[in-house]
Image (cartoon, rainbow, N blue to C red):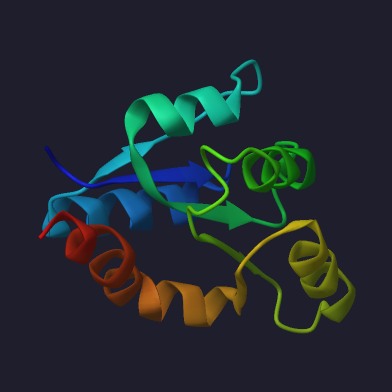
Length: 124
């Protein structure tokens, strides 16, 4: 089974980039919708990593709190990304439970290695 990454984002640029990296690394991207129970989706799909865009219209803060608050999904690493100059949003992401927060440019450049580290190595 391919490693799975949950993506909480609505930005088409990052969605395309993520799908490209997923295709080259052999992992699968899970895209929750606003109506989904993200804890149930993450557990049922066997998600190994969750990526969060802090500038999305999706309720990322609530979803991160739900994911980190449930023992079934709390261990899954959650990496957020956003504007590098927005220190308030960075702090907010850490406070709601994100394990790491990256600037958008760093996120794009590190995406293949993040998938390798958190998703593919867990399979082996």
